Structure formats: structure tokens, C-alpha cells
Amino acid sequence: MIGYYYYTTKVRPYLLEPERSSYTFGVLTLATVLFFGLLVIRPLASSTISAYGQLKSGSSYSATLTQKIIAIDQATVNFASVSSQLDRLESEIPKGTSQSTLITELSKDAGQSGATLTAVTFDTDPRDGGDFLDFNMSSSVPTKNLVVLLEELERDRLLNIQNIRTNLREDQGQSLWDATIQGRAPYIP
Image 1 (cartoon, helix red, strand yellow):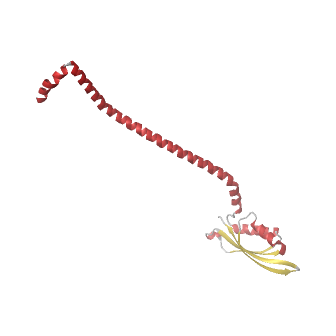
Image 2 (cartoon, one colour):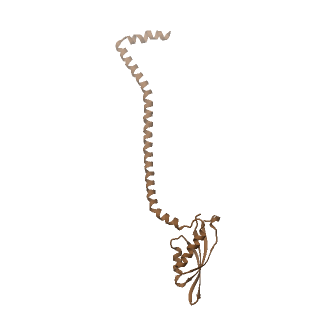
């Protein structure tokens, strides 16, 4: 009842005057527009800020992706430049049961240098988990051909010669070196 009395005595006479009612209507309209406008602007502003953040992270993602593409291109160029060397290295490392292969190669090298291969022994079996094949090679080499034998052993192969023991002897008027060479050959099963 107090609300009706307040409306009839205070608000209604105020609204009946045209000058005052137009200001009141304008202020109420402005308040309504501001209130509901804020309700509309807030989601619009948050969507705009979210889209801006996604755009910024997208540009940094694009820059990172560009760097990775450049790195892959560089790796491709690097691999192309070393692939021939890798193929050569792959062919020089013995594979599988390499003891017989190594014996054949050592015998061939000895024959090309004018030496006589007398024995080849192996200290370890790579199938036991080793990465290297340790060998001892005994040969009889003419004096002038010892250096040639060593060069033949090192040519086109990855051998690590660890020890060379030599003994000079005379045989049928010719000087011969009895050479025992200890070495390691890489082994890849």
C-alpha cells in the first residue's frame, strides 16, 4: 500500500509533466541500454581477446614450424653430403660371421704385398657381445715389402693395428721379416 501511495503522490505527478517525463524516459532508456549493452559487450570483448590470443599463438606456432622446416631442409642437405661417405663406411665394416671374410682379406693383402700369410688367430668371438674382432696375423715378408704390407692392410678398411712384432731372419740368401701383427676390426652383426 505504501508503494501505491508513493507512486500516486511522487512518481505519477512527475511523469505527467512533459518536460520532466522526456528527461526521465531518456535517462531510463540510457540506463537500460547501458545495462543490457554491457551484457552484450562483455562476451563480445572476451571473444575478441580470445581470438587475438589465438592469433598471437598461431603466429608463434607458424614461426616455430618454419624453423623446423628449415632445420629439416638443412638436415636433408647434410645427409646428402655425407651419404656417400656413409655408404663407403658401411662397405668397410665387416658384417655377419666376419672371421672368414677377414681371413680372406688379410690373405689377399699379404699376397698383393709379396708376403706369405702363415697364421691368423682370433682372440675374441664377436658373437659373445663384443663390438670388435681381435686378431693376430703372422706373415713372412721380404724386407722391402713390410711397409707395402702395412699400407695394404690400412687401405679401404677400418683396422686398428695395435702391435707389430718383427724378427729379421735370412732364408735362402734373402732377408725376411717374420711379422706378427695384432689388430682390431670393427664387427657389426
